[in-house]
View (tube, rainbow, N blue to C red):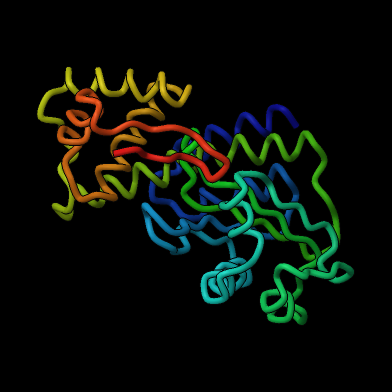
Amino acid sequence: MHDAFDAALDALAEAGDDEAALCQPFIDVLRVTGASVASLGPPLGSETVAASDPLALRLDELQFDLGEGPCWDALATGRPVIEPDVRESVHGHWPAFSRAIQHDDVGALFAFPLHVGPLRLGAVDLYSGDPRSLNAAEQRQAGAMSGVVGRSVLRRALERASDDGQVDLAPHSRRLVHQATGVVLAQLGTSPEDAQLIIQAHAFASARSVGEVADDILGGRLSFSTSADGIEDHP
């Protein structure tokens, strides 16, 4: 299983724009029926990035339309949502979503935050046709895989924004951005790669250049901290 997990991490890191490659590793390692990857709210907007099958896509779209469901809970809490038996559970907090899926072939639902370090971007939704749970090791694996997917999704969104001319990803000064990355790394306790992606995501969301954001960070006009809701920026 460990070898399969390592292979899944490698496959996710190399997935690029291949939507199927973002979902299949979850299905293979966790033995679920279907999977989807969705961005939710800022900074990327709400959309399905990848779905393994029509039902996985439907589950995403219902949650977008209704504003409730496991993906929203995973995003809000930053923690996995484990629903091992959908048919027997009473979802007081998902009433509309629960009614909408009562005739679908869904026995269990799981959602994991899609993230880059502490920056929450959306969720990975998994479903099983039969009731079942995920043990602690499987939940850790799903969380690690979701982190790899989060970096891939954010990178792809930033690259597309650069191609569209929406935001300038080329820094005015590589040294400036490098220094700002170190500041964000210290503020959030994340990796250098994730710190730089967080700077780029802030630039994307504010329609500014990475260089401008880096200058604000170094000038003390912008800082980041973590909270129960994820990352907070402080202008």
